[in-house]
Image (cartoon, rainbow, N blue to C red; front, side, top):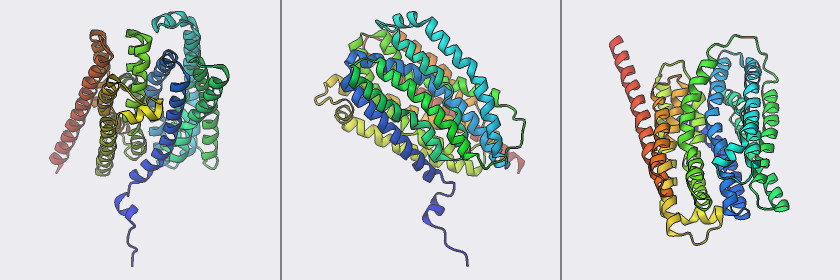
Length: 431
C-alpha cells in the first residue's frame, strides 16, 4: 500500500514554492542588510553626499543587472551538464568564463581612471574620487555572477543565495565603521562596496570548490555559451536601464538636494522588483529547455506568476496605504512632506510592473527564446528619450518610468502569449 503524499509533495511537486522561500529568506536577509545600510547612510551622510553615493551605486546596478545574463548562461549550461551526469564539468565552464572576463575587468578599471574627470563633471561632482572607486567596483563586479550562476544551475539554492549576498554584509559593517570613524562622505560606503565585492568573489570560489569536490568532471565541449550570453546581455541591459537609471538621470538633470530626495524614494520603490527576484531565481533552473515548452514548465511558470503577483500587490498596497512607514524606518523621516509621499506612491506604482516583467524575462531566457524580450531594449531607449524631453520636476521621471514599465510588461506578455498560441496550434496540427 503506497503512502499518501504529504501536503508539500501534493502542492509543490516541482519545489518552486519551497525553493522560492529558501531563496527569499536569504535574499531578504541580504535586503535587510541593504536596508540597514541605507538607514545608516541616510542618517549619517548629508543629503548631497547620499545622492552622490546613490548615483554611483546606481551605475553599478545598471552593470550588475545585465551581468545576470552571465549568471543565467552559467545556470542554463550547468543544469544541462548536471542532467547528463557531468556536473563536475562546471569547473571547466567556470575557468573558461573567468579568463574571458579578465580583459573586460581591466578595461573598466582603465576607462574609469582615464575618464574620471569627465564623469565627475557629468554628475556634478566636486572630486573624481567617487568615480575612481566606482571603477574599482566595476572591475570586481563583472566577475560576481560566475559563482552564483553555477550554484543556481546545480539547484544549490542555499549556497547560491550566500554567494549572491555575502558582499552586502561586508559593505554594511565596513561602510558603517568607516563613516563613524572618518565622517559623512560618500567615498567611504563606496570603498566598503568595493571591498565587499572582492571578498565575495573569494567566498564564491570557495563555495564552488566545496560543492563540486566529489564530482568528477569529464572534459566536454560546450557550444553556444557565447551567443546565449551576448543575447541575454542585450535584453538584460535594457531591463537594467529601466530598473536602475532613474537615479542616474535625476542626478544629471536636477540639483543635488532634489537628487538626494529622489534617491531615498527610489531606494524604496526598487523593492517592488527585488521582492520578485527570488521567485524568478528558483523558477529558472526548473524550466530550462532548448526552446520547447512542456506542460510541466507551463505549470511551474503560471504558479510563479501567481506567487509573484500576490507579493507585488501586497508591496504596492503597503506603499499606497502607509507611505510614511518605509520613509520612517529606513531614513528616519518622521514627518514626510506631501511631496515625498506623492513621489513614493508614484515611484512604487511605476516600479511594480517591472517585477513581473523580470519574472517573464527569466522564463524566456530559461527556455532559450529571445523574441518577446527584444522590445525591452526599445523601452529603455524610449525611457531615456522621455526623461530627456520631460524633466521639469522629479515626478516627471516617475511618470515616464511608469508608462514605459507598463509598456514593457504588455509587450513581453503579448510576445509570450503569441508563442504559446503558436505552440498549441503546432501540437494540434500534429494530432
